[in-house]
Amino acid sequence: MLHTVNKSPFEKNSLQTCMRLSKSGSSILMLEDGVYGALCGTEIASSVTECAKDRNIYVLGPDLKARGIDQSNLIEGITVVDYDGFVKLAAESSKVQSWM
Amino acid sequence: MSEDTNQTSGTVKKFLYVNRRAPHGTNYAQEGLEVALIGAAFEQDVTLAFIDDGVFQLKKDQDTSDIGTKNFSATYGALGDYDVQKAYVEQESLDARGLTGDDLMPLVYEDEDDDWEEKPMIHIISAEEMREIIDQSDVVLNF
Image (tube, rainbow over all chains, first blue to last red):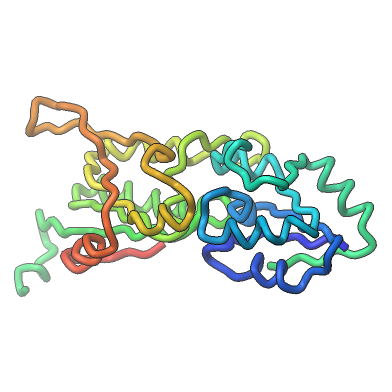
């Protein structure tokens, strides 16, 4: 199952709830303001690092670029995808839940 | 405070623009910037505050070419031309987001009282100092 998160984790708890309620082995894609959840050194980085151990976490590259976030500043274990990768993830998944 | 109510001519008020939203995901940041520029164009005493996700507005190297929206981050560079001299960023907000002053755009203004010397507009301050800035403003606009 693919989960998407498009809200900043510092403004809403969408990412935190997604991480709490998604199953091991599922995929989480951060996009739009959700990409801030992939930044290293933040107050939520350790919980994201922990989550990345048994879930596949992805982040949308164009949204990182728009926000001036360099890919070297991401939490280890998070994979950057482009729009084609987003489509591939959605197509491969039986269901998509978007945490708004 | 009776003199503060006289808005007929030449009254300059201390306008504080509080920015608490990340850019690009919503319109708040861009709208706030435009309203701040309007305040400056009317020669008001403009102060900008960046708190919570608002600090992301000042992140260096924003490039929206791949998401098809206007890269309004370049417009922050025009604030100095409108004689905006003060932008305060809360340290606590930067810390929570893993950012430092080096991650922010180096905004400047030219000080007409000091031989047009170029000076930094951004000041990183504590929550305690931010509290005073909010308290000392005449009008607070939130975005």
